[in-house]
Image 1 (tube, rainbow, N blue to C red):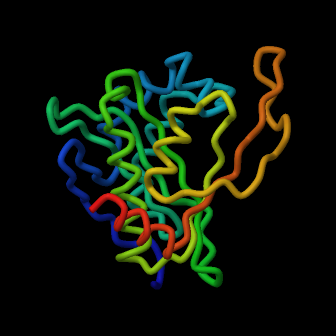
Image 2 (tube, one colour; image 1 turned 90 degrees about the vertical axis):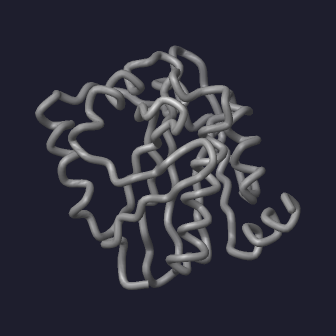
Amino acid sequence: MSDFSDKPTLVGELVILRPLDEGDYESLMAAMLDPDVTRFTGSRGEITEPEYREWLRTRKDQTDRLDLAIVDKATGETVGEAVLNEWSKDDESCGFRILIGPAGQGRGLGSEATRLIVGYGIEELGLHRIELGVFSFNPRARRAYEKAGFVVEGVRREALLWEGERYDDIVMAVLAPDWKAALRSEA
């Protein structure tokens, strides 16, 4: 693997993952402004429209990360994003994050998007390890990650202070052998 220059389109039964672009602004901004999405991602602060549009426009030029829009095949609507980031070429590893707005929740779109991007990272890019953090108040996401082969590695205790309450950040990772085992268990 040389880098993340190639920006693929990945097609599943429920979703299409395709490169993010400026045209995704309205859908992604609506998703990010949802109070549940904000809480699940631990997002704080505001970004201006010009800053965010520019950020979206430049995703295709990034060689150290892969930012893909999650498109609901049933509606053609962009409902979120799936991202491989924090790449370590030397360690054959990276981070993963996903955001799904209300229009894409509760129908398995996030689970399929996770499996598609993780499969691409391991099978096509040759990554050995993909890691993430999930807050303790988000068991639905944790289950989706476990289905994709992610294993709990540890807990960053009380890492998030949200509206006066402290929450753990659960550290999870999938290794290439875990991914292959998860695929076998689905068959």
